[in-house]
Amino acid sequence: MRIGLNLKGLAYENVPVELRWKDSDHETDAFRALNPQTNVPVLEVGNEQLQQSLAILEYLDRIQPAPPLVPADALGRARAWSIALHVACEIQSLNNLRVQRYLINELKLPDTVLSPWQLHWITVGFDAIEQQLASSSYTGTYCHGNTPTIADCCLVPQVYNARRPVVGADMARWPTIARIYDTCMQHPAFDAAQPKNQPGFESPALH
Amino acid sequence: MRIGLNLKGLAYENVPVELRWKDSDHETDAFRALNPQTNVPVLEVGNEQLQQSLAILEYLDRIQPAPPLVPADALGRARAWSIALHVACEIQSLNNLRVQRYLINELKLPDTVLSPWQLHWITVGFDAIEQQLASSSYTGTYCHGNTPTIADCCLVPQVYNARRPVVGADMARWPTIARIYDTCMQHPAFDAAQPKNQPGFESPALH
Image 1 (spheres, chains in turn green, purple):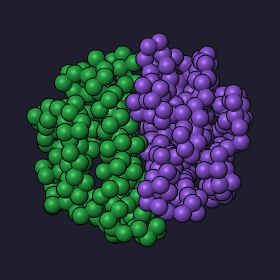
Image 2 (cartoon, rainbow over the protein chains, first blue to last red; image 1 turned 60 degrees about the vertical axis):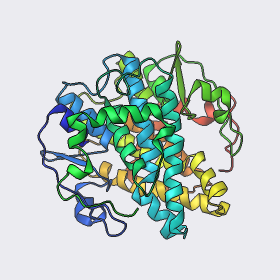
Image 3 (cartoon, helix red, strand yellow; image 1 turned 135 degrees about the vertical axis):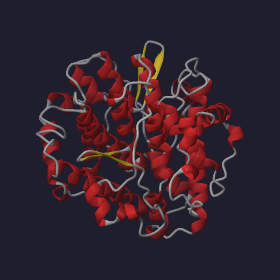
Image 4 (cartoon, chains in turn green, brown; image 1 turned 45 degrees about the vertical axis):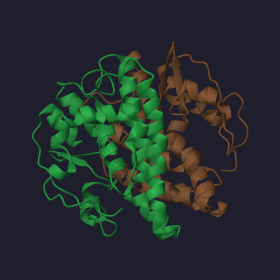
């Protein structure tokens, strides 16, 4: 979401929400009242609270069409969306904290399952996306063509995640994804969205 | 996806893909060649293969704008998308077969964890969506207003899933979702998309 806001050049106030193993802000009653889905991020627009990163990116593209975050043609749009959704639905959703908590707290699995769990879903997901990117002439310097789209907005944070020591993914397995990630990191909108460039950033939690 | 195609009145050929515990069609080499993401559904349009249900619904809305699957206003669009994405990312992605397989085959958990696992993510997800629907004046006979949107296209199959004996969710906990589901099932586009009305339908697999 931050990447999208930056790409659009839209001003926003950044309110960090603590995501830690226990007693996270995002499961407090106050945050639940703001956002019944109890997920981050939330974009507050006047009295409305928008939820789900991709819904927010879609909204940003409506209120501020330039630069576009989705290709103009219907097939291109579907392709960019499918990459973004693959990251959101097949990787991010499986590796988030609430799932990790369930594995440990409810299924009573040892902490040692968490790194392989995360690496597994990143590997399955990136294998698929790498093949999709490498086999298509629509892939450019970015996931779709030569400007950033929602696909890049979703893929880049996941590569950041994958490279954390706790996951330890070796990006050499996915050369096209790695190349696009490097391209994105040269872009000021992506760079400014990095966790280390956010207010209140501390070194990542263990999980 | 079937619901969206039916709502748009678009003709399509339905090719069933076997989703079973082992050796599913969708993980064969032939299906992987067609769809690197190895997920269902896939929509073939000429030589292009479109993946991810929501990307396909977005595509259908572009090529056949009437009736619209998303509200016209930016905030309404974001709301309908957020409900659809919540189902796709926070429920469906966690309960699909590949995750269930990982729990059993890799984490060596007993089969008995599968029903509680599915019910847990349905409960967490539906609790959030119920609150979002019940607390908003945008909710109508359908999730957003009085015509079906992508939110309903995603929610209905998940309610179908939740009601299967293997999951055993009691929909009384989510009266707004249950009411919208009942409304949808009166709609011919939703009824025609039911699994039992598909070619090659057999009674559901155990998992």
